[in-house]
Amino acid sequence: MDFDWLNSPALESGIPPREIEESFEDAFSIRILPDHSDSRESRFYILGRAVSGHGLFSVFWTDGKNYRVIFSREMTDAETAFYERNYDNETSIA
Image (cartoon, rainbow, N blue to C red; front, side, top):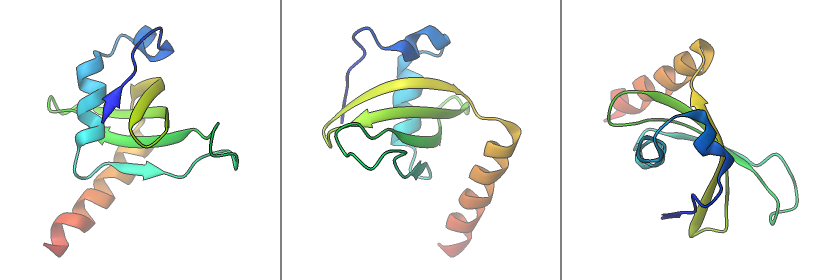
């Protein structure tokens, strides 16, 4: 997976790009369906944790190989609870 950080508005969040990339590599990340029906313009959402433990919510675009992060921020309490429930369900199955 390659990230396009050139002039990315996500860089304005102050979150290091490496942490954002790590949240995409999180085995327990939650990817949410696009918000548009046109696949060329679809934006996806992801909840994931960086290695540091920071929970991040990101909005991104992808063509399947390249990823362009449009927005990233720390998870809200509700998002963290949703992520934790999913994590608990996945780890209890194993």
